[in-house]
Image (cartoon, rainbow, N blue to C red):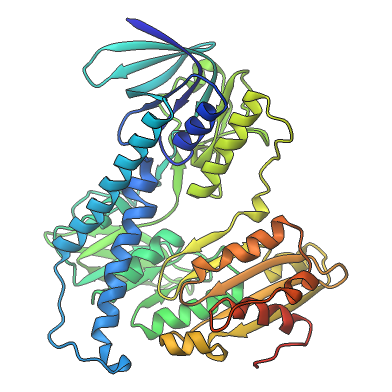
Length: 467
């Protein structure tokens, strides 16, 4: 058994792990990344990136089938699901290669295999060639991510009942799909398959879709999805899945206590995720785990000296950009960088790439009120924006929530075309502790969708110009 010594070992090469490794190398730390599957992790290979490639194809198909709305003709429009999947996989492969290059450029050692904590400052690696290796480091960052959650009565078989992985690489285009769960993952797949023509039913156990979003956003989204032809069942539970030869019968209990059977060709399970905490040596090392996630402090430190954890492994929000930021914070703390700031989770934006898109940051109106804040709320509709109308994307609105006494931007919530590209402006405003005054005095370019951000702020103070 060979042994290498490093200043820092990162277990997991996803968006948290590889970013942490690069930052460590920049700070002069001899660093290694241990990855058992593919560099870039779930996000790059099976999540964020390839799903956006899929959604781009379905968006393009939707526009093509509605070409007449733009004065264009496109007859006999069709698609090839195999080619759509092939493009998505090529995009993921290209970026996987990019991460490999970045780690090599920064002189980060990459070790392929499954890692476990062995002793203080020691990690053993089961390599793909069946050999074992020991790696020593004063500090170890766990960045093993998470996986799709299953329940005893809701388990994927990869054929008729899918997780997100199976839904990303269908061998055939299903005519009907039941999506269990209406969070970001569930709704994105619902949107993808609906735009390609599948009959889609979404079952959500809570009382509204996209339940983490502001209530107005959720209500608007549900109306939009129903208008597109989706069937939405909220306050409902899937009690049983009964696979047949070529279809699945779902037994669904609705909020009135009645049950109904829904027969579909495929089921997509999107009922949450759980941390990859198994077979890492955490129990033997004494690392504290609660509800499937590693417990850390604001810097990413676990209860065991020299062991750190970041990203999905540590719990919500399960977002790639949160993992990357946590990786930088942990590494800078390890390296002794001055003025390291802990992550303010209230400033982490959330994005859902359905049609229409949804994005948000900070407190919802309900949470602001529950916190005892006196608030001012502004709204501006897409129909009032010239660029949105010109794009043929007049569905949606921007909502801002301010503290009535201080002018603090408490939260911002959006639904509509390309709002995932707009939310960063409000995120930056919150990071800079900007008030309504600075936002009002900012000049927004015309004609752009971004003007709606300005108008929503103006509306909160009774000064909107275009509604």
